Length: 433
Image 1: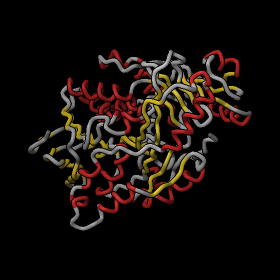
Image 2: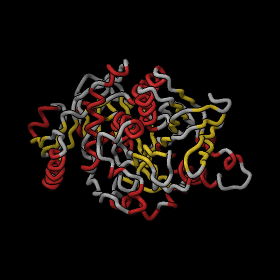
Image 3: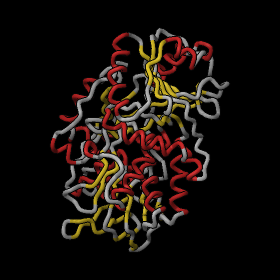
Image 4: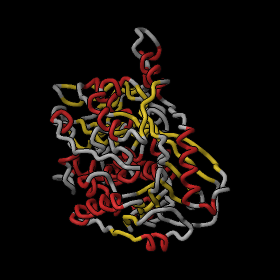
């Protein structure tokens, strides 16, 4: 841990999969990297997500980064020298009527143009993929190159590989402030020391807006609390990941089903939500069937930071170190019910664990990835809106390309930070289920 002033070519803020991936790709190329994490590596959403590696994303402009990331995932176990429980079993979304199938068809066209292999499946073809599944679906959209991996293993493997290449990783060490000189990044001050640097990569997930706000950067960002259910192990059923009617599922290497999607997603009202209400309310309204807004602990915790002289105000990050969101129990029950409807033969399968995590989202559900023109030396790699685990390897590689090469290997125009101020946001379509 940094006990005195140090120096690094690049300081990465955030020890999730995006930050650890960026640290790995930079250190591998000889860059002196320091990664700062207020808690533990993968302590928040990078170990709490569904474990999906998917390319069936909300907007076509996100597909190139998803494809790039999936290509990396396919060889990642060998590259990192670690078991990630990688399975490339594909992904499918079930359609329950003609409108669903028409939506899938309209998504397939731009996906094909961007080089992503997709297919429309009939009911019989879906049944052939997962014979144990039953229900009133009429077909599905299928992405055969999608996969799954262990969230608990993947980020840790990136961090370990980054350290082997010389990266310095500092955990339980929050960033207090970023210092500027002549309008550019000059240093990062942490709880335990100062690090001189000319480059900061903000990969702080749900906390990125709070890291950037003292610099005058307004990142519209809100956390979505998502609840996940894990069953006890059972015999192998499928290696595919899937969307159903208010349920998603994957079966991990141990035979446990990881489930979500039962309408348990929550916007926890906090100061960030109040600041960004105008930008986020339209999305909340469109998706009101599965997304609710609640006031409670997060708002009270934020309000305490406004009290002059309080410990929460003096050391705000210390009070945000070990975040363990409460699961949405009603949503979890709904998820389990929908899963049992899909798999009647597994109706007696016990539930092993229920948890929640905070997904960092932006108004257009696309990341902020790239440099900030108004602040030399500062870069965002955040806002992946539920795709962070899948896109983490690609995002980390893009960060290294931006810093070390003539340019990134994919077009980042739709990911630029300036789009929020320009109100150049991609239109969002509500999910019907």
